Image (cartoon, rainbow, N blue to C red; front, side):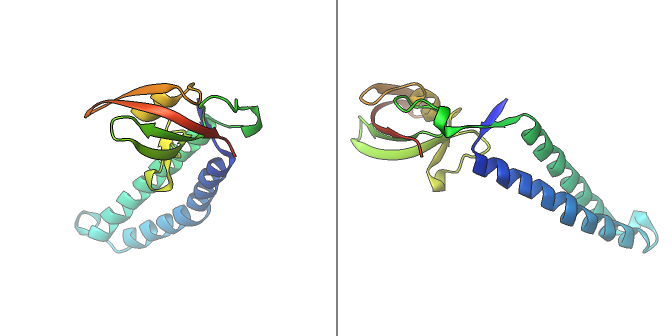
Length: 155
């Protein structure tokens, strides 16, 4: 079971709808056109169309499974005093005295450029359940990070 924000659930549903309603019919049309060109063993366009078809079907199935096994999180039901899914956490790396702020999200929403880290990442997992002022220890490839929680917010 994966938990998603309403926004991400809607984005995935929109992508799936677009693939089914727009992309896949075009892929089928391209495949029919290349098949009509004759000898399939010498037809590079046909092989490319088959690859596109397989890729599109694979993406559709993946998104269907994500939606089937996902639930939308109600932000109002989440604890405000502990780090949890959808928490925006500001913390200090005690080794470098560097402050950082990330939102804890599901793996399907992770986007470092947007400041979103997965709850399954080493840092995300270490922060989960902690309160302001507590120290989290994250095991990362370069060693152990000691992180002090400065603030927690949920929008």
